Length: 308
Ligand SMILES: [Zn+2]
Image (cartoon, rainbow, N blue to C red):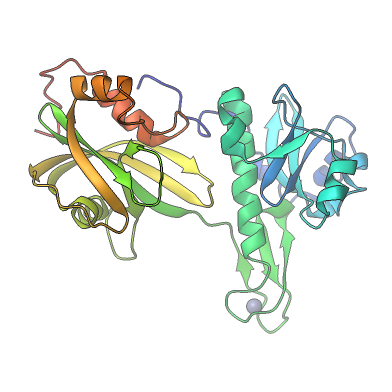
C-alpha cells in the first residue's frame, strides 16, 4: 500500500464503552475542552485554513439540543461530538457559526488523517440520523440515545431500537496481464476514468458482487478476485470494499446507462493519456485511485499472486 487511505486512517478512540454512561456524557458535554462540530445539512464549517469549526458545549447549546449530540470519540482525552444544526436557516448559520460550510470531500485532502476520519464518521452518522427520524417498522418518530449510536422508536407498542447502518459496496480494478480496465460513468461530464463499483445485494458474496457488477457494467468476465482494502465512504453511507479481479474474457461491452465508455490501459497508456488530458484518474481521496495506483506501481511483468 503506497498512499494513505482517506477517511480510514485515523486511529482515534471511538470511546464505545462510554456511550451509555450518562454521568460521563454529562461531564463531557459541559467540559469547556470538549469539541462539538456543528453539522448543517451534512456539511461541516471550516476556517479559511481548512481547520474544522469546533464549539465548546455551552456555545453549541445555543444552536441545538446538546443532549442529542453524537459522540464520535476521544483524541488525547478530548471528547469530540457532532451536533446537527440543519434546522438553522442559511442566514442563521452564517451568523452563528464561524467559517464557511463545505462538503467533507471538498476539503478532505487538506485535513490530517485523524481529522478526515473523525469528520467522515460524523458525516456518516449525520446521514443516518437524518434518514431514520421515523421507525422503519411502524412509522412512529424515533429519538437518539446511546450518545447518538442508536435511535429508539417512541411508539410504546413497538419500541424498536435502530442501529447505524452502512451499505456494503464493491469497487474493482479489472486486470488483464499488463493492462487494466478503466471506465467512465455516463453521468460525469469530464473524462474521468475509474474502477467499476456497485452495491452488494442480499444473498450475495463480495466475490459474486464483483463479478456481477463488472459483467453488468462493462460486459467483461472475471475469474480470480483479490481483496485489497476497504474505505468508509459516507457519501452518503457506504463501506467500499476494494478488489483486483482478473479478466477471463476481455471484450468490452459497456451498459450505456451507468458506464458510457471503457477501455484497457497499460501503465504507459495511463501516463500518456493523463499527460494528454484525455483521461482524468479517480479523485485522490478515493479507494478507486488507490486501486489504480497500487497496480500502476508494480513493476511490469509482476505476477500477482492470487490473481494468476
Ligand atoms: Zn416503531
